[in-house]
Amino acid sequence: MPEGHTIHRLAVEHQRMFGGRAVGAGSPQGRFAEGARWLDGRVLVSAGAHGKHLLLEFEDERVLHVHLGIYGKYGFGPVPAPAPEGAVRLRLVGGAEYADLRGPNRCELLDPGEVKVLRDRLGPDPLRADGDPEVAWRRVSRTRTPVAVLLMDQSVIAGPGNIYRAEVLFRQGIDPRLPGRSLSRAQWGAIWDDLVVLMGEGVRVGRIDTVRPEHTPEAMGRPPRVDGHGGEVYVYRRAGLPCLVCGGEVRTVEVAARNLFWCPVCQPPSAQVG
Image 1 (cartoon, rainbow, N blue to C red):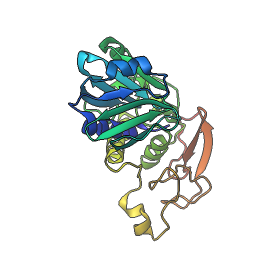
Image 2 (image 1 turned 90 degrees about the vertical axis):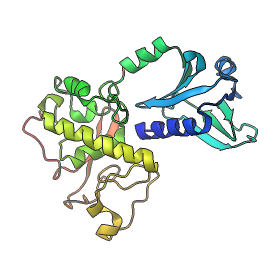
Image 3 (image 1 turned 90 degrees about the horizontal axis):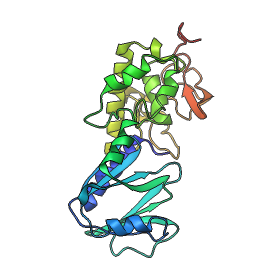
Image 4 (image 1 turned 180 degrees about the vertical axis):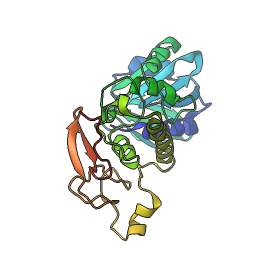
């Protein structure tokens, strides 16, 4: 599933292509035909994101809400747009470009009240100007739930996924099994601040890079990472390989139905872990 930086990049792309313009809209697949008819000819007022949710506000205050889920994806191109291939849920056309949406988990029109309900059930987003780490801290600091699980809970903090949670915990030297209430406020602040920087860079470059300058392939004289997810990382999908910092073996375990990666040397067990 795409992590939050990808959705924020999609918002930027929609704003660039369609912001302030009336768009043409259609649902070649037919599953969003009624919504597409409403969108057709309306102006995109603003494009934004909250966590993994894309929110496109059109005139008359209705919002197109898209959640890609596991299988959803966007395709972009210049007009004239070719005949749709595959199950295109929604095609938007405006100016000199078009956007095709395929296979989303959610594609729906919401009124302002429904948008508020959606956002109220999401935690703060490190990529949003209104993201407040104190809101998340109030939940984190009261629970025995491991921090590795909390960082995947979109109602606690919106946007990070499996890669960012593993990498930020490694970078902060925190045992992923540590209960939220055993984190110090300083540790939580460091996690949040690191996510702001890492995810912001993800928006800028379009991939997840988490290694510090001294651990890049060039600095270490090692081959670059070859992986479909791209980017240079410390532990994600590196189980059984040597840690880039200490040389110890990177481990993996399933946590909340997802594979977690960590280095037991750089992220030593805490006495608070049961």
